[in-house]
Image 1 (cartoon, rainbow, N blue to C red):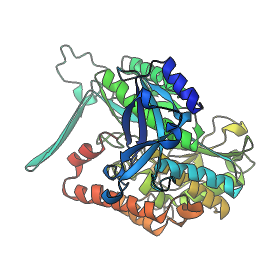
Image 2 (tube, one colour):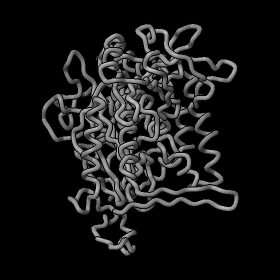
Image 3 (cartoon, rainbow, N blue to C red):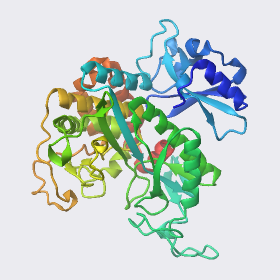
Image 4 (cartoon, rainbow, N blue to C red):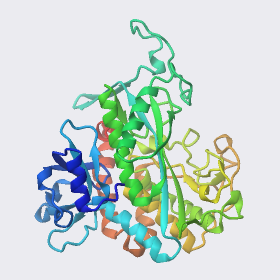
Length: 473
């Protein structure tokens, strides 16, 4: 984040020759929206007065009879966009009601801010750190259609193992076998230079890259990891991350997607979320309990496990999410925790003994949702666990994928479908309402939007429609 004042933002834009200002925010499902104004319209007062827009045209926002809303730029978010030909200053915005000038209750960024405020109100800590690992695919071709008489989808990549026999004039081989993408060097990994370029672009917009590599699946699955950060700031950065990845791919004549499961029979894309709570600059998850964790950290895990069913409606909020969350396959569906164990839904990383490195990793989420809501909901579940001193039970230090149903008896799993997850959220959402972080209105709207726009249409034409609806996630 830039941390500039409004006047400094204007000088920053002038220094970089900005001609336009892009004002960005998310709709309720989590897709970045934008409206653009000439740079000369940006004044110091704009950071208080905002700019008007039609809230009734944004998914999950206003009815048409109360459509006028304001986008209010956040000066601390200022960055130059590296992609438009016209020099463009980009500002992430908060949403306000133009009459009351109050923050808009359905603004996902406002919900994330309230979650951070609630953490401080509890006295448990003052900072929630989040480190998402958003996996994605880079394809060379994507086609899909749904018509009255039929429907289809098809993706392709020069790396795809299915192209081992294709006449490519010449075919040079080096295809990535199924589950063989983690992580051989070039020429098998064809995307090294592309990821290097993408990392440079990410750092240009203020994101600190830690590592990049090919991921497990065939056909261009990748991961680029960012340094962790405070909750709302990290959600801002994840939106920048997805934007840069997709536009960098387009510049290279390719196309990127964060869709959880675009390929049948190979690994899907998750978003493992590292989480920790700090107070006064000190980490609170380090201690003398299991795996070097504190009692607070174990209670936080207890909260995530207790509310996992409801969380999935927010952290895994698409029909396609549950193509990845399949028992016995690669995604961690068993609600258990363990150290070093990637088959458990909650992993405790053991790379370092430093107290600052002590954290938990939720492995079931994916990046098809709204990052502000995803991070806020997990924090609220963890805080509920701490406040109620929820016991996560014994750790399961076993390969959970290899255990029989009898051996897994008593171990709960994540919901098996989006309808099941939405039902769980309706039953279990009181933890989200604490501190007025989430409201009953936002939960009702979320459930209604998902059922009307995703669950019901998918009952008729599932797979091709998934690509049409989710490819641009």
